[in-house]
Length: 119
Image 1 (cartoon, rainbow, N blue to C red):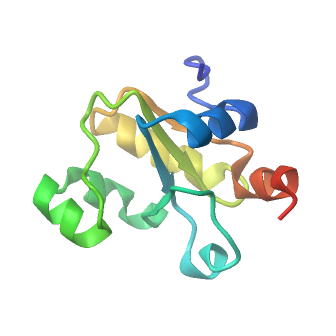
Image 2 (cartoon, rainbow, N blue to C red; image 1 turned 45 degrees about the vertical axis):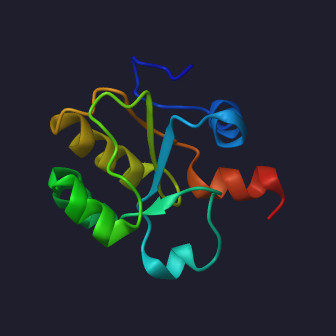
Image 3 (cartoon, helix red, strand yellow; image 1 turned 180 degrees about the vertical axis):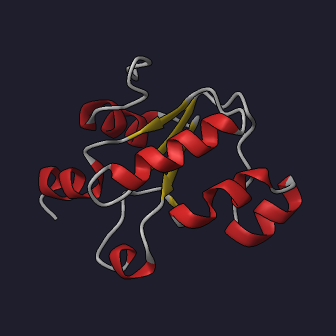
């Protein structure tokens, strides 16, 4: 389970969610150049500078722009990640301010994911 004190999730926790959870909404907040080097399976690309506007959109507008349903405020697992952890934390804070109480940051970020996945 995610650590509510720090609003962070570990590699092991995220890996288990990626493999098994239908309740996971994983957001990659990196820029396009970083994204082209690889991604965590199932992630949705929403750059960090657009997170606040994206999660404030009406559901139909969100779906049209990102190709997926906008997560409800009470989604159990909303996880943000970037390349090394800082921007994911910024995005997590923005989502929490919009009412996404379960928003978490994968602080290990894509750097840790790619190293541990051998990619």
